[in-house]
Image (cartoon, rainbow, N blue to C red; front, side, top):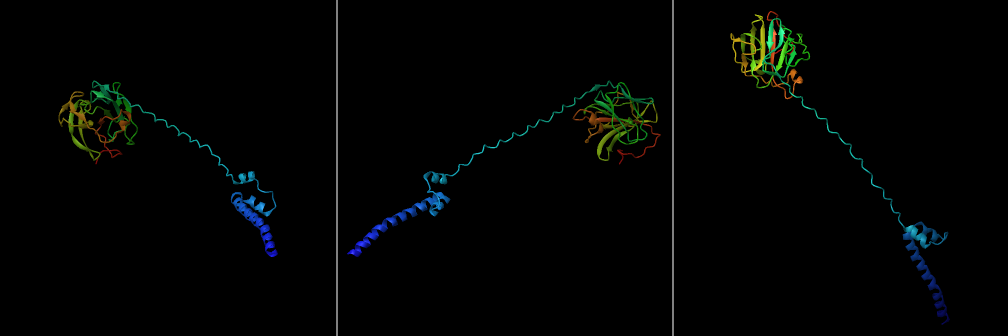
Length: 270
């Protein structure tokens, strides 16, 4: 009986300690899940017990700082390219007045209206240097073609596509017809022996639908050689000095046939 009583007291005195131990263990696990190193310090018995304030501090996650969105620079403004004003087409009413002379030969404009007369180097060594007249329609001298001939030994007379082409000189037709320009393009021509210089030749090229023939008499500014100029399918040097789109031109030169010709750069012979 005394033994059972003693055992009961021991059990009674031991039970509270077991309960406290269990409570301590539960509390320790709970704080370990929330507090990290603070829990370890407290269980080691070397630091002050964890307070409610420290527990809250230990379990609070820092709020990330929100950065202001980066500003995007506006794209640079692209200025519109400057507009190039079209070059106006200026026509001269020629009245079939002279545009050039050489020796006693006088050349008149081959059309009633001309945009410009572009003097340049002929590809024939016998071509004579032309002297522009005061009545020439806006005459210009074109850049060299490295042909070794006079800088004004030929003329490109720019006319309208439907302009009637008349003889630039009074004389007799020596030959006329069609030929192949630069071995590739169809073109018409007329060669006239001028009355003022027998034996010389006035060559007229780039005409379409030639209407004269060998032996026929022609009068300067009156006789129609062709109803229109030949529209060339390529750019010409004189086009750089006219309005756009470029108009066709009639090629005119005066040749001293006593001077032998030699091949030269830019020649049209095949």
